[in-house]
Length: 234
Image (tube, rainbow, N blue to C red; front, side):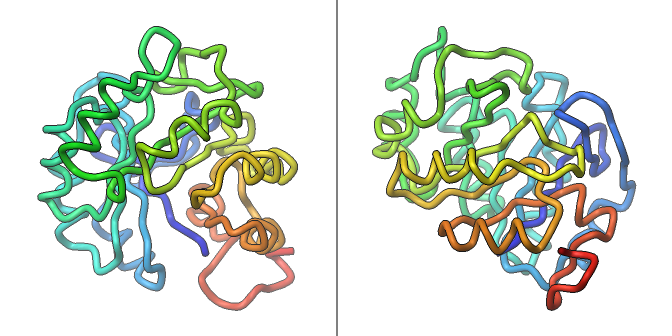
């Protein structure tokens, strides 16, 4: 299943290349709900909050309350209280990334508090990787940890994983199916794959692995649609 991504920066929905260079921006953020109305799931990521450059809280709340789809929200969730607030806005689950790690290691104390407060079924852990290693802090800091190594240890804190292949994010060059096959072997939990997904072929291959496909650039550029596959999707 395709999951559209609405990444927020400076009050706009943006698409970045590898989390750094802005490729496009959409001013009418709420208008995307109509554009993506055929999809049952949405990911909303507050990039400003993730990078500690303010936040887009009002937009996040409006999206949660207006969407007909189920909404998962991430970006800058660093406390159980913030997670609770976002769930009260109407999010189905929260996506936690950087806060799951501290000083280069898993932050078990934080994750235990989070699960005690909201329950593991409402937590998605984001394991974003570049060059094979987990990146945090808006993809600016690279840890020594590799996702396949930590997934079994993290399973007790979440209901699923969001795994972004940052090397291909926003490039429209396709993702690494080999990478996601490796991650599939590392955990029994559901995985949503992200990062460079551009074709129906990739979406189908990920579906065969039991994975959803979180897609941004390819949807914004009209390369993928919710309808049947076309020659352009191959």
